[in-house]
Image (cartoon, rainbow, N blue to C red; front, side, top):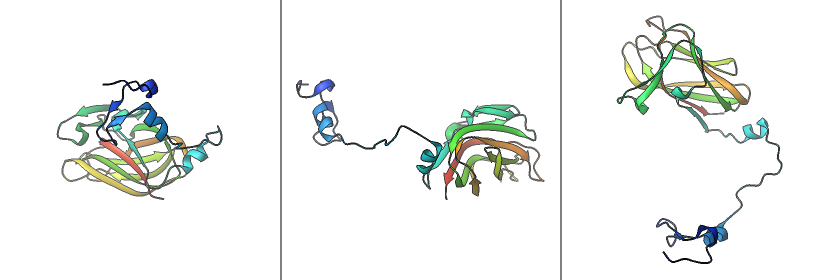
Length: 192
């Protein structure tokens, strides 16, 4: 490649067939640069962050990347036939088994979607944010089926902030033989 003395610190141009003439140079980048945001002050507050989280935004957790265990024995497992090829489960299968995530979540109303297995031994997960229970989802079924999308609507988070988001197996369906949960994905979608 020929050297362009007007290119600046990039040196040779970068070959990109997807952009204009296929040549990206420092001169072109500098001339096309635009200011995308201005920071008016150096004070970042929870209120400013919360105001930027819009309806329709999603907070997604990979279950095996939890912050801590509240109670029980939790095991990561892999299987090629499952969505994302794995899950985390409470192998202790006991009442009050729980797992905790930490994240910034804005006050508002959410739909919570959880990809998990439904089974004859599954329990009811109680979901709490910042210590306040926001809803439950029952994973019991008369048969065993992997990778089902469970949905809970109208879950209200009272306060914005960096908070504990807890999933605890505090109860079970009358026909369930246990308190199991096989978590594969957790998504909070802001609806109001």
